[in-house]
Image (cartoon, rainbow, N blue to C red; front, side, top):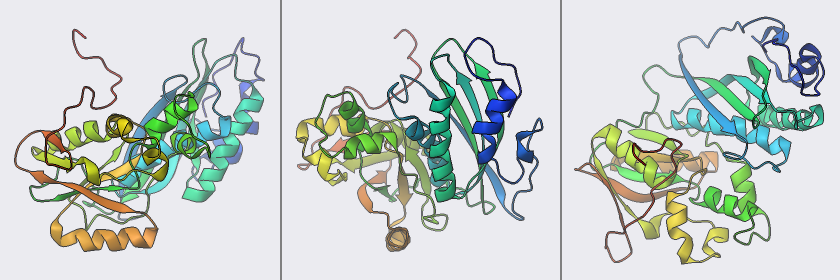
Length: 328
């Protein structure tokens, strides 16, 4: 990782800090984090897939979230981007901007979470950079993966008559944030766990099954809008078919709008031709992942949500955006 000097934040010299905290995360190609860049050879005959995400304290995680879950969420959010394109993880780069309030013990916990997930998902650190900041903790991760040539799933290739499917359950992330804030009950901690630790749906092998794919990060409705716009199609979904966890259902139907528009689910959103639906279910069963058909792709250019009686539902908010609309 980069060797810029740290100053005024109470941390030890950066060389020693990197050696103690981050070098144990390094894998092949990282050159033991002693050089300016990583050197590695991607698998023969495969295309590289690269994605990047940042997390800011107070925006993407709470200040009192355990540091090990912060590290794991950072990695998992990026792995979800690979899963959305049906890619296999290869390695990652990470940048950390550290405020004075975060000491070495906090980062030791952060790294311990990454160690656990590196083992689970078969990925290692390649390099990155550390800097100091007077603002909140800022974390950025760039993940590299690989996929068979021409087989990466994209959000722009959904076709009319495809079914719309999702993995797992929807709304747990949004309700988990409310649970962490004490706004809804969460007696067994399930919802908080879903907010803190997304489950990237890697290994489904969907390149010959789905027409299009993406992950649900900004809210189901907003991400459906992304797919519809990029593919030049309309999408109709049925609210009563959207899978909700028992923990969310126990909170009552008044939270449905929050579940459909809230972010942080990191489930997959897939467009699948009818002839491939059995294949999708077989692939998902092998991976132990639930999949549910929630609607279909139609001619048009918008997203409609229908209730059980077939009436179109209205939503004041459709998802999360970090950028304000002009004049907003």
